[in-house]
Every structure is written in C-alpha cells, then in structure tokens.
Length: 406
Image 1 (cartoon, rainbow, N blue to C red):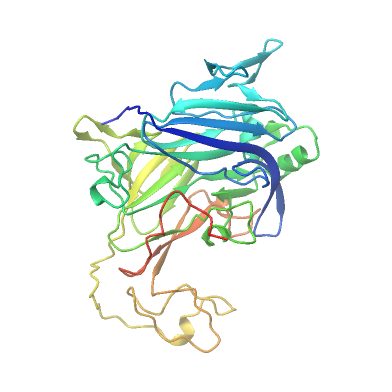
Image 2: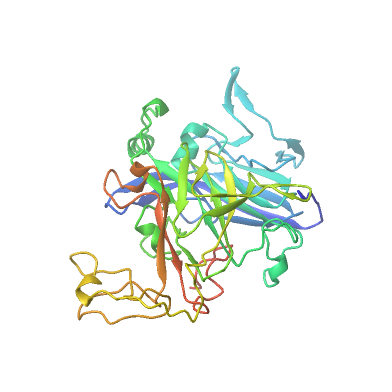
C-alpha cells in the first residue's frame, strides 16, 4: 500500500550551510560543515530533522555561508524543482563546468541562496544531503533526515499513529531516529586548513549516531555542553510497546546495527513499504546492515522472558559488593532481576538506574566502530532502556525533537 497524494498545504523551511565544531568523548574537537535552521548558529550534526505531512508542498531555501558551492539533494522525493532568480521553476539537474560534472543538482554559490520545491507525496523516512562534491561535503556533515507522516496520521489515535498509514501494520507507540555516520579527523582538519582533500586516503577514526559518539549518545537531547550535536541516540520504551526505529545511512560506509533484547521487524526500505498488495513482506533481523544513503524502518518490541507486570520470579540476588561495576562504584543495574524494584546499594555508590529499568545495548557489530580512535567503549553505540509500565512521559520517543523552552 504505497500511497501517493497531493493537497494544498504549504511548508517553508530555511536552512543555512555553515561550519563549526563538534566534541568527541576522548576530548577531541572536530571541525565540521553542517545545515542549521538558525542563521545565528554554527553547524550542527546532523542537520535539523524535517518532519513533513504527506501531500505538503515544501519549499526549502538554502543559504550558503561556506567557501565553496553547496546544494541539497532529496533522495526519494519526486518532481524536485529549483526556483530561479526570476521566480520561475525548473526541474533540478546535474551541473557542469567546462564539461566536468561539479554537482548532482543545482547549487548555491558562496554567499548566495537557492530554493527548492517539491511535494512530499509519499510517507516514509528519507535522507537529505549535499549533492555538490558529495564525497567531501556529505562526509564533512552536510546531511540530515526527513520524516513524512502519512496523510491519515493522528498522534493521539493508536490506529492512526503509524509510519505508512492505517492498515499497513506500522503502528507504533514511540519512535526514534538513528543516523549513523563516520569521521576521518585528518580529512576534516585538511578542510579546516584549506588543504587538499583526498578521499582516497579516507580512514575513519570516529563513528557516530546522531552526530555523537558513545557515551555521549546516551545523554539527553540538547545537552548543554554539546551545542552542535543536539540529538540523543538513546531509546526509551516500556514493555510490549511498539518502537519505530528509523535508520538513516548518512555515511560513506555500511554499518551493521544490532539492538540487544529482541530482533527488529523491518517494515520499509528507502521510504517504500514492504508489502505487495495484501501480502506482508516485512521480515525480522538480528542485525540490520544500513548502507550509504539507505533508510530502514523497523518495529522493535521488548516482552521479556515470561514478563508480566506482577511477575515475581524467585531468584537469588547477589551480595551488595557484587552490584557495583567499575572501580568507581558505578552501576547500571538496580540489584533486582525485574522491572520496578530497586535494591539497596552500599554507601557512596552512585546508581544510573532511575526506576528499576533494564538497559540493553544498541550498537554496530563491526567492532572498530564501537571505539573512539581505538578506545572502547565509544563510537556507534547507544542504549535501549526499558522502563516499568507507566513510568515514561509522552515526550519520550516523539518527533520532531524540539529544544526546551528558554
């Protein structure tokens, strides 16, 4: 059931291409390029998440504050046009100079602006990224994600809180967007210094989810010391909830992502529902390989072994001295084998457990990608936290992600 629709709604989005810096947990600061929706901000990684409604006519105006031409490609969106200086519209097309391809689409020169217009005709998860020198500019951080809601989407109606429309089997209780990427700090430094940028020497040392490396991936949205990395990658849910995980492959490499706790059920690829008429073609996976430019929509559920809210499976709890993990006495475990019960901890031991929740890893299965320049843990890793029923607020697992009120 692959719906296509148009209507009269209009949406205007302004993006600026700028430079800036991001932080890595090992103490390094990395120079980046990125899109922002505020002209007063420096680059963010990834760019703003654009949540659209199916059928909206969308105008995106790009203003380029970088030292070379920049453009935006919208993979999966049909009929994209560029608005000319005279106000007319023409289909986007590759750009050539002296017979050489310089951009996959119309671009904005340094200091100039360019507008694109398209109709968000199909629900799904999509990428947007620079189409000019993409081997350089996408790697530098000029990318973001688009979520198109189906035309019958209603956030507070369970049957209509779906990824692809009522009756498609894509109902969800919470949703999270995870954008894997990677960074070669030497190439980023070359761009910062105006030196030759040779993609043939590409060798990533850092791997990111939503622009952050672990353990920063587990911090909340808009963490104060990460101003240019606004989005958390941590997944929070309650037992039996359907969690929609939207993967967006923004990097150059493929990334095998694996959540502990259960398989995921892939329901769509590249914004296309895995269904042929009434035949459900969705499938379960232990690990999902996210390729460059690819998007994968999945449903994750955690039931637990024999889980019921009142379950009191008898078990032998370990001694207090065995509850602490690490020489500093940190722990991610409450001392209870079941949700919602917190055991006593020794004096001066700090618990990261808020309400007796379980924590599972979600990470890349390619081991170098879960390090920060070779140091473990780090990189493309985050946590899935399963909280006792009725614990989480409605704001957990909602898109768009909005900054807190000043």
